[in-house]
Image 1: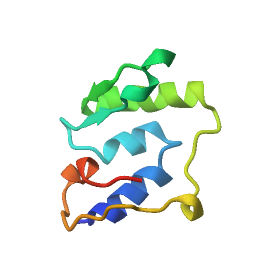
Image 2: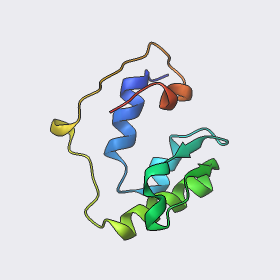
Image 3: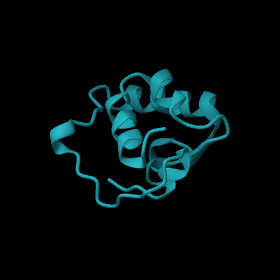
Image 4: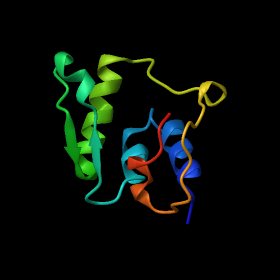
Length: 91
């Protein structure tokens, strides 16, 4: 099992592949992105299908959307080795 930092970095590296990015979430995982509501992006997505759709929408809005590994710094690390790290790790 991956630790939270490894899982977060894998997600960030796969954000240009919506299916791959969503596969890193639990089947009932939740992705909340409330600050893009003014662009027509709903604040909460539940499950891999909805998360896949969200990432597709983000890539439609921002075609060059990506995270550069050298520009990514983990501010909080958790010892948790399961998916709930998405609630505890910030970038």
